[in-house]
Image (cartoon, rainbow, N blue to C red; front, side, top):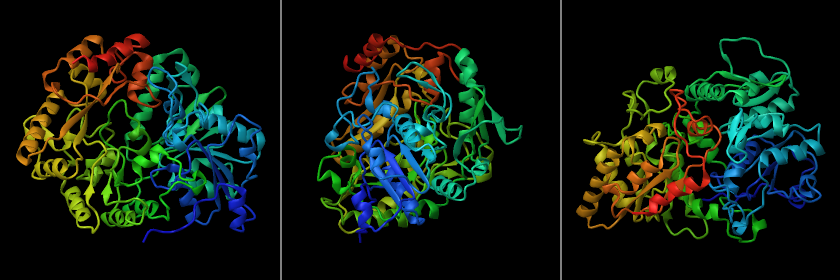
Amino acid sequence: MMNKGRFIPTTKKEIDALGWDYVDVIIFTGDAYVDHPSFGTAVIARVLENSGYRVAIVPQPNWRDDLRDFKKLGTPRLFFGVNSGAMDSMVNHYTAAKRLRSNDAYTPNGAPNMRPDYAVKVYSNILKKLYPDIPVVIGGIEASLRRFTHYDYWQDKLLPSVLVESKADYLIYGMGERAILDVARHIEEGAWEDKNKLQQVAWISNEKPSDNPDRVFLHSYEKCLKDKKSFVENFNAIELEANRMVGKQLVEQIGNRYVVVNSPYPLPSTEELDSFYDLPYTKLPHPRYKGKHIPAYEMIKFSINTHRGCFGGCSFCTIAAHQGKHIQSRSEASILTEIERLKELPGFAGNISDVGAPTANMYGMAGNDRSVCEKCFRKSCLFPKMCPNLNNSHRRLLKLYKSISEIKGIKHAYIGSGIRYDLFLDEKGFLDSSSKPYFEELVTKHTSGRLKVAPEHTEDNVLALMNKPSFKLFERLKREFDRVNKDNGLRYQLVPYFISSHPGCTEKDMEKLAGHWALKGVYMDQVQDFTPTPMTKSSAAYYSQMDPKSLKPIFVEKNMERKRGQKCYFFKK
């Protein structure tokens, strides 16, 4: 049965109704409060609650008035938590052309302007000014990907770690369930001088850490400002450690202080990961919204997240930088239990909108020999060719799909997340005995009419900079897709995603894309202009105008009018 538990309180009245005379942690977030495991604020709040802490949430506080939203719940016993929401606030606010968006999917009725630019910095500064003695812990995607010196597209310059500008005491990067509990215990015990022992946490030291084999010193912020190559070298060092199964501590000097980014946790066990999803989420928006439409919630309310991480290594993607490269999969039992509970949700008619993750068909995949993975630091297990140690069988996923189909009341289980077709296909054909059955089931049983895939471009010179396979593989996919359609009497569409203006992409490249024979008659709605976001290889290339791997100069289109011109080629077919 669906857990009928209460929501995390958001007002003084709700706190009083619980009979609480104090709150341990108060979380400020840029999103509306939706009590669903797809929303990080809800997960962190439930994890803290499950460990016995009293938690309150202040969603989308008003930062422009007398700051009453920041005062209404008083001070927490332990700390304030701060995040911008499920997206970086600048990506949330602005298009690739730096135009203000007219709506916000994470706000009731899609209303814009309900969070500030650089929300983590703004919220944290307000709290430090009002309550200078109360620790502030920042986290979520915005804090996580801005933990080092980073290129900010919207200001077109390098910014220091968000720890510096936010004045926060702790920064939790990546998926923060384990770290938030350790930070809570750390603060509760008053061990302010022992932050080196906290995993997956960044902080600022007033003293230079000592030399240590498990510690890597990066170029300083000031050196990066003067020398783009130093910034790229920093990015490469950061990415190298992020791709290891066990990374080292990283230290970056800023002025006379040091940003210290402690090493991450080992991968969570299946049981531990299950425990985060098995908490008593109501899976509903808080009643304070009184039935208002929250677009992001409507998209995911009947979806199921099967795993975390992505080993695809796409240059423009932040998933691995935040969730990790190595796949962390839930158990089949946990997934099936969550699906059973979907039936208790209002409006559920038996159709699951997505059984997926960042890359839906990586569920259960890992290296055949874990000891090989422990020594590896490749960015991608698929590019430039598949790692020979990778177990890319889809058998476990097919078994999961079969178990889902046997649940009474489930009509359809669609795959709305992206897939990597180079996990089951190469230019010669299917890769193993599970590949063809997987693809045929994906198309015939789990596609609602359009199968979305992401070749990203047609030209090999651009694809190489993206860390994506040759477009010839998409051509093979299209032939197989057309065959499955014909064999099953279907008229489904293949919908490819493409990116314009990526570093290395010229107008001539876009002209070739637009005229490619394989795209004749293909639905071309899923297109976007490249947006540099913090902590990606593509952003480092955009800023530096060099290939981060070779350090050689590359072409980067930075003129807004010509960027728009590149995107227009998508529609000149």
